[in-house]
Amino acid sequence: MDMKILQLFCGSLMAFSITSCTNKPASVENSIATTKAVTSAPQNKASGFTALLEVIGSTEKAIEAGKLDGAKIEFAKFENSWKTVEDGVKSKSADTYKAIENEVGLVNSGIASKQSKNILLANLQKLKQSIIKASQQQSASNFKVSNLI
Image (cartoon, rainbow, N blue to C red; front, side, top):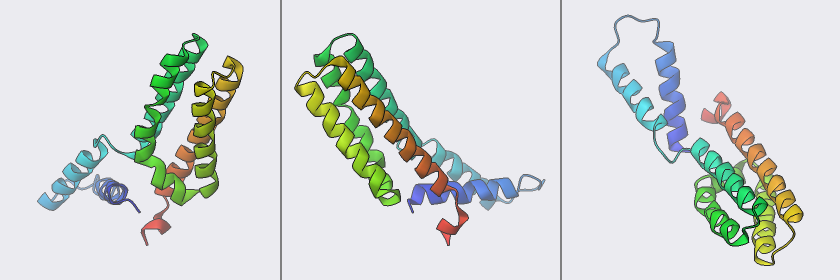
């Protein structure tokens, strides 16, 4: 399990369990501060999925406007965000991972070969659905206590 997620979960659990206490020991205050720092870290899983969806959206807009050069530039940003969540997706669902990799290839080759707007947009929609599915799989598995044992 990713250490940041584990820290976030444990810190959140600890913060939740002490909210009814009036006197918090210094160690609890430190745990809460650590939890806040981890949750504000820019490279968490949610920001990766959000960034991927933003790239897809900006690529769609460029394609709809008939600007394939712009679409190519926008979609090139996908890889950087994908790197932040790729391993987690692969470990949670090999099928979802393979679907995303395949769909990314279809979009890249479609832009390069100047496929029709409809085909490009359809491939982007498939990719978007796979990203949403991966995000949901990641979120669901992050909150299972059995993963911590």
